[in-house]
Image (tube, rainbow, N blue to C red; front, side, top):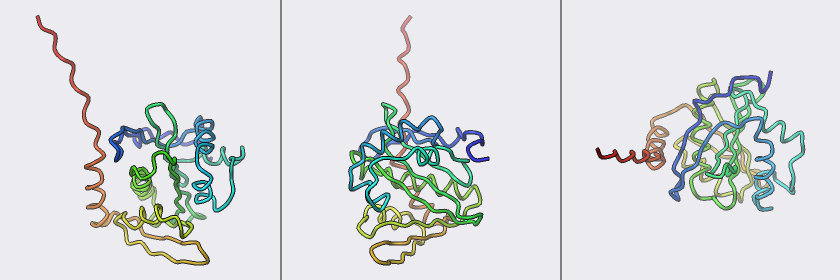
Length: 204
C-alpha cells in the first residue's frame, strides 16, 4: 500500500550548494505536510505557473497528501531543507502505469534558484529510480522554462525534446552511461561537505 514502505534513511545526505551553504537532501515524509504548504506559499506566481502550467496559489488537502505520501519505489520525492529546516526545493518521480518509465518534476524556491539544487534533485532521483527498475524519465515543461530545460540538457544523459504549442516533452534513458558518470563525478566534487573540525585536545 502506498506510503507504508520503510523510510529509506540511506538516501539522506548533506550537500554543499553552489553558493557554499550546506543543505540536507532527504526523501519526503508524511510529516512534511506543513513544510510543503509553507514552501508553496513562498513561491512566486511565476514559479508556480511554470510548475503547474497555470494559476495555483494554494495546494489542496488532496494534493498535499498525494505529494507527501509516497511508496519510495514507484513514487518518490526528495526535498532539500536548509539549516532552519525549511523546504527549499522538491523533486519527484511517478512511475507511469506499471511501465519502466516515470514522469519527473521539480521546483526550487525563488531565493535559492541557480544554486544547483535542481540538478542535485535530478541526479539523486535518477539514481534512486534506476535501482527501482525504472529505465526512462519523461517530463513536461513550458518552453520558457529554460532553467529546467538546461538542467536536463546538462545531465549527461542523451536527452530528446519535442515541442508542441508552447510546451516541451523531454525524455531520456537514465541508465548510468559514461557521459552521465563523468558529469556526475564533476558535480559531486563540488558538493562534498568538508569534515567538521576535530576538537582541540586538552593539554595536561
